[in-house]
Image (cartoon, rainbow, N blue to C red):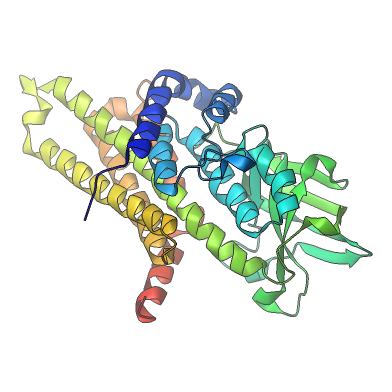
Length: 382
């Protein structure tokens, strides 16, 4: 068993770390306070090939592997979780399904602009009545000659307010259950009948836009079909498996920031005439954080490695996402406790880490759903 990173993986991680420390971290608090999309940072990430890391170079990507992607995302998320999720969605939820299920023509037209970072992509899945259960989806796609007419609203779409492109799930046969769901890939700027709806006011990841996608008699051409009709649900499951590795990476990044800042503060904070690191209560908190973050990172990198080696990774991805987000939320709460009153104030980034950590337990499959996925795989002997 070899835990050593390849030279290329180390290079990607170190490059991402330097960029995150110098260019992202100093701006993170201001971006959060202003709820401001980090446009300049995203352009720089594009130049570094971070928006399509595992996409082949011929389609504008970095041509690297998913372990490299996870390592880079950890570093970016450690500096700014909002930037991390923008990067994650473009890589995992948009570029992956277009790369995996698109025709050669679709890849050139829809994958290259987002893998290169010229534009951003998003994933139109969740609806008001279709979160954990996609069968509740009401967005309809009805055939119209050689094209389709779309009607419906997507909810809580990360990057939805800033994306040029989307992979969209819609019902094409309402009597077929999961087999009636179909995927489409769209250029939103050239889709008459589309508009961005409400942009949500949220607890955390405030520099990342979360929006409604509204389709009112929106006509799209037949070439918008991604894969075959009725295969959308299967595509969705595989896409979300990879997306969960991205969210696990985001969570690990937040947790690493919490641990680092807790330790730094505890070394300098004095009570009763000595640094609080001398107190067992603080030592135990730090020890638990460090152990759980190492375990979370190993689970995450294992899932990414399995994906790279084309081995089953559904269970590993669910484990990584569930565990990493749970222990990061726990670490963030303890981080606030270690900093005391300062942890509750915006003067320090710890309160932002706690707000940002919570969403990792919810999106791309709640942790309750993750436990069902893990149990299902165990029962099936996988």
